[in-house]
Structures are given as C-alpha cells and as structure tokens.
Amino acid sequence: MALYLVNPAVDMSLELYVSDRLESALTIQYERIKDRRVRETFVRKLEQSLEKLLVESIDWDLKQPTDAQLNYATLVAKQLGIPLPSEAQQYRFHTAMFLETYATQARASANASDRLSSSTSEQK
Image 1 (cartoon, rainbow, N blue to C red):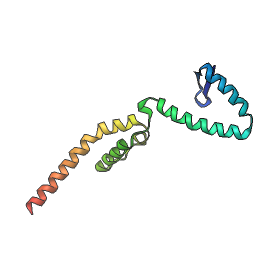
Image 2 (tube, rainbow, N blue to C red; image 1 turned 30 degrees about the horizontal axis):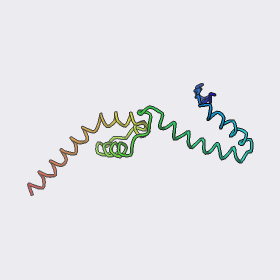
Image 3 (cartoon, rainbow, N blue to C red; image 1 turned 90 degrees about the vertical axis):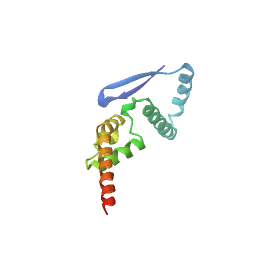
Image 4 (cartoon, one colour; image 1 turned 45 degrees about the vertical axis):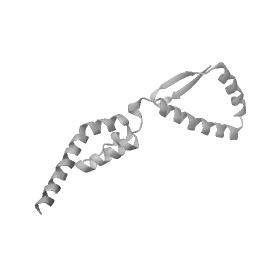
C-alpha cells in the first residue's frame, strides 16, 4: 500500500510505501476516523508525529541552526555591528556560512580590543 504526501502549492507528491501489517491497521483506523472527534484527535497526533519525522528527515543544511550556532552568530554580529541575516536565523547552512565569513574577523576585533584595553591599563 502506498500513502501519498501531497503539497499542491509546489505541485509535489511523494509516494510512501507501508508494510502489509501497517496497511491492515490503517484500514481499521480509517473505519474509526469516520467519527469526527476520533478523526480530529488522530489528525492532530499524525500532524505532530509527521512534523518530527520530517524535521529529522530533511537535509542538514535546511534544519534550524542549533542554539549554540545561533547564539555565537548573534554574538559575532553584535561584535561587528552588522545584522544577522534572516536566512542565518532560519537555516543551519546559512548560519555556518555567516560564521565562516565573520567569526575570524570578530575574534580579531575582540583580541585587538583586549590588547588596547590592556595597554591602556598598563600606562596608568
């Protein structure tokens, strides 16, 4: 048996095959979801489960940045006085590219600032 995941907005459909055992269970489940309340509960559970599975299944670069990546990118942007691009806030790849481009510059700027404050305090 095949299930179809359809996104009409981008004219995409994926054919997903399931085992005979699952097909049998789904046939019984389909009978149960004729009741509107049961259907709504089933759909909510299915949406939540599918969301988790899809997030885990997409390519790494399309996933959200990790908290550590986002925190570091925000710090780098603040140190350099530049905005953090919205793409870098949404996608791991863009966060990684932002950090690859600007992290060294931010470290150099922080080191120069440390040397300047250190030499200023030594002169006093």
